[in-house]
Length: 232
Image (cartoon, rainbow, N blue to C red):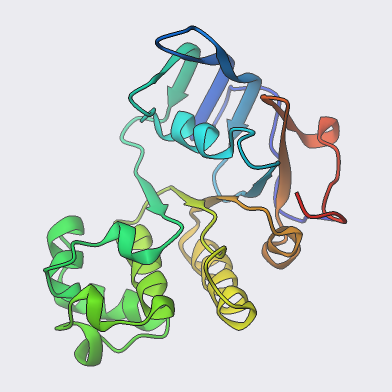
């Protein structure tokens, strides 16, 4: 189904991030939380992570970024390309933004992008920098906040963008618009994209490969059961 290059079972070659024989456990009890035999994310790929609530989707995203929650420990091998930049889109756009700073100011401060580049990326997500740049997050709608969060994720020219259920708080129209932005920006910038979701339509609209988390184990490629016909 997907036309994007598939996930590979080998963490070698030109992988942006690779996990090999990775186990994530609870620090206090040692209880297993997540297991990944081998996973490599390649440049320009689009992937969707699906699985039931509590299966470890967010934990896998954290493992890919190298920033685990305080109560988790990782063993095994995580390898990242030198100087790898990773953009992140949270579930709600407000989570990516400082509540007291004007939008354009904080985008430039975080990414060190100039005003022209900031306006260009905001325009790519359908926002007018002059109209919203001086506003604080509380003065924007939920859809606008998510667009700002997407622009923030891509503004630093990352090789990889990770999004944790970015459409779960949106209505269907806003969801479709958000997915179109993610797809188009990843295509035009060449950034790889990984999206965790419960919504099977996300994979279809992103034309993405499937990663499934089942009973704490990550399955990729041909090993992954296709659950797009049933909501996780």
